[in-house]
Length: 521
Image (cartoon, rainbow, N blue to C red; front, top):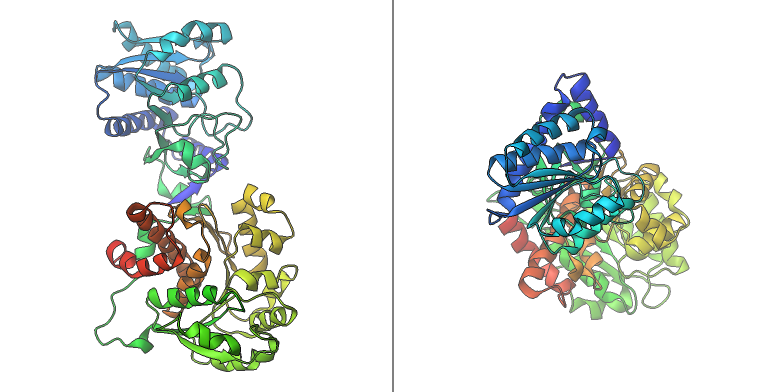
């Protein structure tokens, strides 16, 4: 699913009307009719209740007038509260206001009420409250400044009403590009958007304002979107199922790749074990875990199926560049390298990570301490000989970019995309709605996952999964998309079964095969 910005949507509307020849009033008609269909499916028990349409004077209000007309024809009592004077409504919106007015003139229970200022709003507040459902048609996707005046008053009234709210295109007051409320925004139970979902519907906190989202086809031809070079997408189930193919009957462990995991240090062996076990559970044929020699005995009890390989150590319990040559030998016959979970950031460890990035010739998944090891030296990624997938959380991303965590969180997509393009790598910025950015400029938002994942070890599991998918022959892009989607989906299933409190990374690992089998194959 593509996600568009306000400017891209405006350009596509314009191209459809001016170049392709579909009139704007036809698009508005299709939008309003489709929105009514969705509203009636979403709120099946609203008959014969009273509906209030809160309308602005622009095209969003025009869509509201179309909805009002269809609802009146279905015998609903509809009041349109126009937050403007009628003579200020222009173009296609005026056309549909006039159509709606003709139906109101024939009705005893429906009407259009002008509310041009605060005094008029104050007089109508009580009448507004005596409706059973609100349709928010005030402000559309073009909003770029804080909501004020009677628009703000109307939004606050709807939010305080405890009645269902249905938004047209985007909840009024929400920035359609960032998902941030501009001062105040409608808290909708459902939103009907048109042609394509907007980034603000999906990004936090916009997703919490949008409610259930339905994308309505209004007749914009697909080729118009294709010509706009859209660069932001939502990962969907179909994208992931396409990555999996049935296994041949005569398959064996050598058929599904071999992952090398370089991880762990004194006090952090659990991270290494989680990564290796996750790689096995996602279907990898073989996994070898390389750890410091003094830790090997203790870690063997944590990993049953993965093999362990004790590596020479300079400082007890820590890996350094002294074991680089042995790791290079270990990489023979391997299809993927995962490094970083629990690895530590000592001077020798940093040198080891740098050498591995420079010399490894199989896809690398660089996580946790391996990311911290190159903070301040990310340019080394430009010299790599194989694809690299970095999986930082916001704090690690801040260290990579020399900024604060707040800076990263304020522009997750922009920062992830810029880093991926600049360093020719895949950047997976973890967190609520994990972002996967590719070096070609495309970015994907993951819709799966929940707050139950806020516990230690979850990222180690993700690293193992992505490495396992790479080893099985997935492209680095598909391995990344499948990894983050299935990782979050496992958590969503666990949240349904156990609640969002207390499930841990080992629970996630156990869920991987079942999730793939039941939900993706």
